[in-house]
Image (cartoon, rainbow, N blue to C red; front, side, top):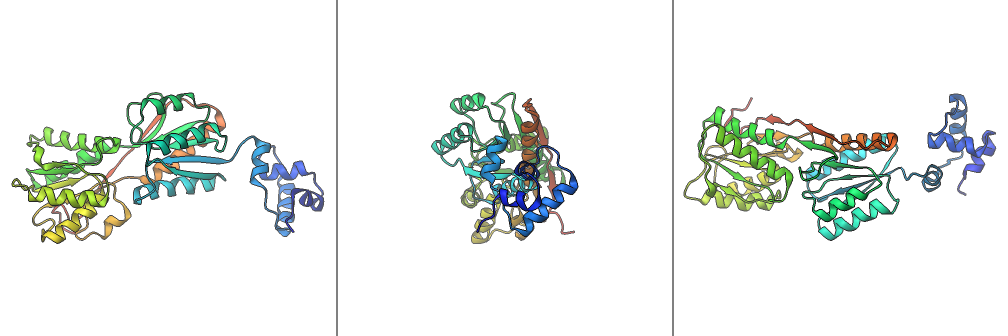
Length: 336
């Protein structure tokens, strides 16, 4: 038979209100009292009812998370960071994907208006006018991950994509003297992809290198995008000396294409990526890439969201997390 809070109160000799305070972390309870109640509860195998706790606190202890996709190591790492930090803070997490615009709007409206969550962590590649209006009217705090510049006065945690891209292209130019550097981009409407493309252009411009439009190909941040992009770029009459691939998932596809075509990396062409996902360390040769603190994005977003919820102070705040060059052999560097 399931034990309820009344039984714990009866056995411990305290009121149900005192037992409730022990589990809700509300009003202070003496350490000795708390330990006695928890010991009795453990002996009785008492499990507190989260719904009842939420009603008493007028809180759900739940964070809503909306991501562009749930597929791929990048998003898995963000979810891991969010979930791990939420667990430490005794919070639950509901995760939803916004892979379609309708799904995104429905989920956002549901989270904002239903009372199922206390706050929202939102990552969207692009925010249109309708979404911006919903966000502006929301009474629940929102923390953004990698939001673009179209939204002002928000709380936003993002990666320094521009500097990361600039740095890795600079490495190709200064350390290896490559002249014809191609690019396989990410999606045109994706903020990360746009910033990485800007960094690529800036590095070529500063060091006086030609920007060759035929060596700049569209991509989609997926394995197949890198596979198709590599085949097209390497078949071009102006073969590149090196290729900057805008994320490691596409770089995996590029490696597959290179193997099929009998192209040696880096002997025939240097290849570099971005993100430093776990799988990238198994590419041979080890890919030179840009390390992104992906999990940190999630954990920092959770921490700041809880801070807002506790203080009721939702002032604008932007934190840009730095990246770091990870040197492998795919660019032509020697193995250390």
